[in-house]
Length: 440
Image (cartoon, rainbow, N blue to C red; front, side, top):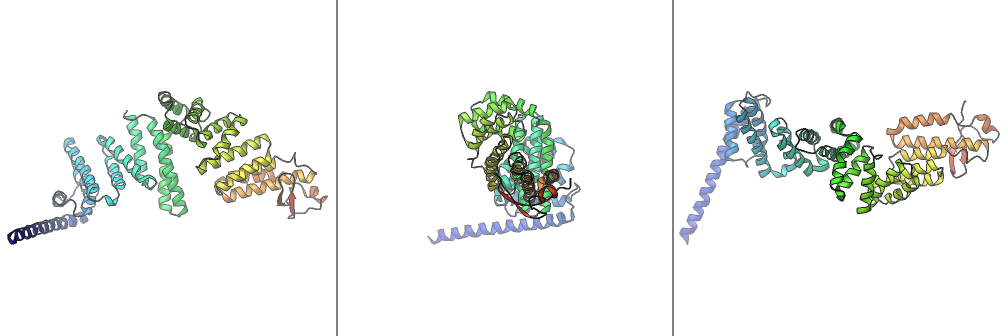
């Protein structure tokens, strides 16, 4: 028994001694390559061979020892090896080594973020045309894993490689549109996030990426091309609910809802899987066709959507229909419901302003009352630009136009109303406003 314990302890001591020796060797090699690495600018291929050899020994003998060895390694392999040779076969072997370094980092240091590591590998591989598919796969996996946290460079890289894969005949054209829709959602999420955080550098990066996506998708994004691409998919899988949702979403986002394909997809989707979302697609199409009675029933159903954005848009569409049909009070109800769902959107206030401005012929108990509706209308346009600076230009235009229609001081004099007085606009509007006069 004692002999067995002695042998066991001896084995442990031996293993510890070997590990210590190995770590000592690794530390020595790390010291050698790091010293040279600091002197190297990391951008040119003229690297110290001693640095490369020392790094190679660390990578082979103790890859899990320090993560920095692997992050340094990607720079060394990229710039000191791959770009140092014109031999195509040797270059491919070096690229294989680059992939191996990234995969080793994922194996031993996954806490650094597998999606982040894969994304950086994809960006590196983009520089080598022979690895286009590998770059695409790595970047796609990165964005799949990171979601809204995806680095802007991964998004740019994935969209670029997707387009190249389509050009090479390795992906269907629809892949460009599918990725565009998904990636734009991520970009918009981050633009809002960094706007709220006042992080100018990150905001600029995602705004630049948005411009790249919009520029890249243009050759594939006109309605004729979209219909051509998706008609084939719809004909092949008319009962695929996921596909139908995707087609309807893309066509709607690109303002291609006048197409016969859009209506066919929307109706089919509602038949297979009726929901507020599918009702929204149909209601929007009937709105485009000015079939308001049909549109109203579907849009009312769409307001029940759990997607606040879709429900809010449905209320705005309903308010617009009421405006066209001269149903001001009901239109205001819908517009106010839209405001409740998004208080930063100025468009519902604009619609209420239009509803008020169009009511002069109905709210005409006296000549002053028929023009006082423009006071109430302009109040709404002012609210619109105050909550939503993005529509300030349109709101200011309406303020200028409708201010010209204010009553004159002479109109108001007979009703004992003077500049700045509070005034109750009656009729269905029933708003308190302030008297202002036109000089016309």
